[in-house]
Image 1 (cartoon, rainbow, N blue to C red):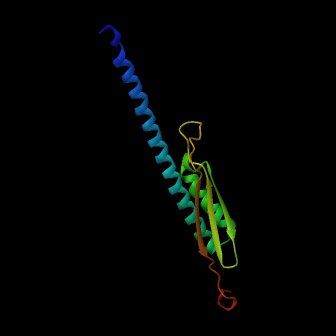
Image 2 (image 1 turned 180 degrees about the vertical axis):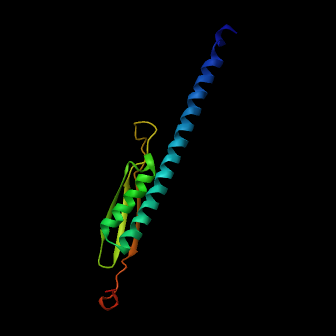
Image 3 (image 1 turned 30 degrees about the vertical axis):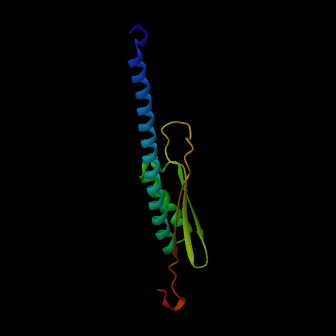
Length: 126
């Protein structure tokens, strides 16, 4: 019996460490999923604004959505690209991290494309 003294304490501490690791990974996964959702919402809103305005309006709207998301949007940046008939708004960056170590998390990427809303010259309002 003397050789097993303190074994339960060591086992308990090892299990506590394992449980804390699992909880940290689960919370980090939720942070990543939330950041992806925020990035997609910002890209969609930015694409709507850019389709009726210009690429600058899309970036401004996407930045506003990211700013409203608080700390989740802090690591995300919007970019817009306007073609002849479509506009694409991309949001890229990283999710908030629990620890300073990246934990091999992938970057967050989201994009949305819409056709440009342009009217023929004879239909424009004076």
